[in-house]
Amino acid sequence: MELGKFIDSSFRYLKHDCSATGGRLWLNNTMLKLYGNMTKLEIDSKNKTILLELELKGELQPIQVRLSNYKLVQNGNETFIELGEINCSREWMNVLLAEQLNGLIKTQLQNTPIPGYLKIILA
Image 1 (spheres, one colour):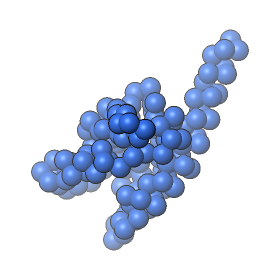
Image 2 (image 1 turned 135 degrees about the horizontal axis):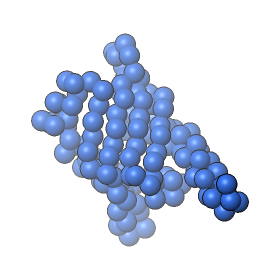
Image 3 (image 1 turned 180 degrees about the vertical axis):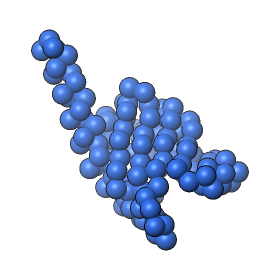
């Protein structure tokens, strides 16, 4: 492997590995605070996908959530995330998302500025 590719892939791995800690901390202390805890976060900025594993209150097993086709939107000095699709490992949650919550979640995210370090990771 040539040195440039090695450095690039190492930086990409480090960037995404660091995102796990910072991103989980931010989401656990904001949007998920009342509902449970995020235990896993994987960000693929190249393919614009985010994979989450959540331990929600009242659930016996973790729930996996896949956020696809996200994009970052700049508004003045603040950056917001705009989601494409949201899919869960629970069939009933996918139905609830499609019927009731999808717009609500997307609206909440679009109105919650993300920290600067997440902007760098997600870009």
